[in-house]
Image 1 (cartoon, rainbow, N blue to C red):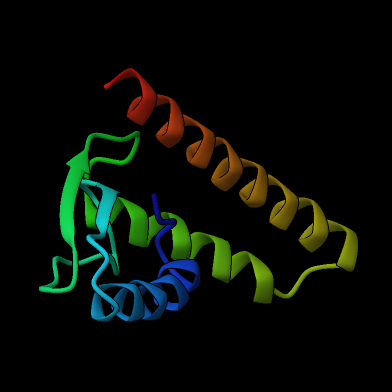
Image 2 (cartoon, one colour; image 1 turned 60 degrees about the vertical axis):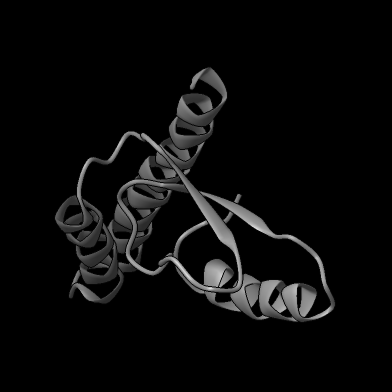
Length: 102
């Protein structure tokens, strides 16, 4: 069960090696995803999640990146980044809950 982004990019290489060694690989991924795409190297199963579209994911990610580089005091930026990290963490938990309830 991959996490979209850099975690997936690293995991994908491992999955390709496992498949080359004769293992059957099944990836369970959310319907809305930026990087997780079907491949000949694994079977892909999709599940619903808290984010319904790629655009929604991109919007949240861009807002997070923007908060990192905003020109504000350190404390203001820290609190804003913390808020975004908390939201992303809650989305990850919610995605897991959706998967387990599906």
